[in-house]
Image (cartoon, rainbow, N blue to C red; front, side, top):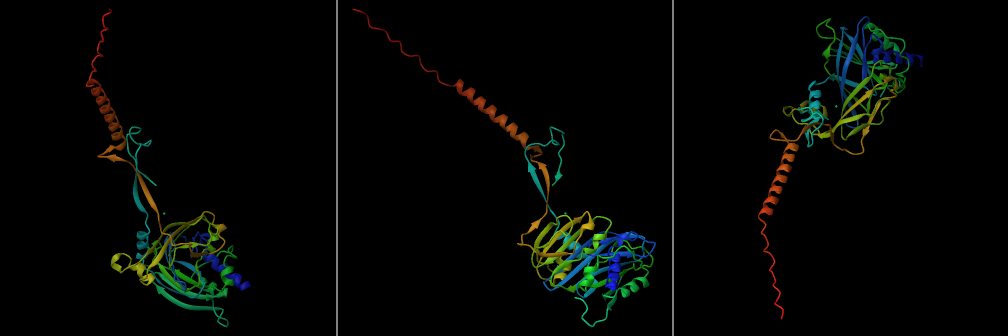
Length: 373
């Protein structure tokens, strides 16, 4: 158990690099820079796909700092394959799930319309190693673009410690227990060493995305390690599955918000969804876009487990621009008042004319009484 807790210490340290110099603890993994350098992740965007048996995560990081290299580790429930992802996948999904902009007209003037201010305004309404297997197993090592990827089945902490030490990464002492659930469940780990192609140039900008695939009987997104982050966390997920998906609970963050839900039938590369088709095998898929914030990361109490929603109800965010209703550039309310005045004037004129041409009734006949006698 001491060895497992030591592994726990090391991997939590990697996951939650925000406590190092400062590195950044992102939802699906974290980076640890070499000593005396800094690295931070400005944004993490992930695409999570699941077909009921296999899960895949395509992840892109936007980083900045002065570190020429960094380490990144992610726990996975079963042995993972790793390859470079297609950067266009993210632009395709951003276009597919973008809010719809529409205009709403109002009739009566608002406080910022003429005659109040004299100007119009538009207001816008986002499985572990088997018994008998070695305690430590390096199951793969590849060079993928800027990434040196080591896939580890590690229940012995010393192997991971040695790998990190050999690559110049130093771990803090305060991260002791966050990985314990992963160790107990015999998860494996993807350890990645990031280094730019051109030598000592600091890591920066959008890194090439990594695509991980592993067996899983449930759709899970690792979040537990982010509880030790020192800054608020923002999670954005594109979930690809057979149905609309939703997190089982908030796991300590704000209520997750669905910004898009709809079925997509990706086609060939020429129609703008070629990268999505490559991920889904060209099959139709239900896309759910989810945003969630974690103002207090220390309250995170588990991983995100996503499940099918009660119904495949489509949804798309609408962004409205409110505009004063006009006709030929003239406010409709002005035209309506002018019209009302005109109608009233016509009615008054007709009444006057009717009175002038009303026939005068003849005077009643004078009756002369008959003479007396």
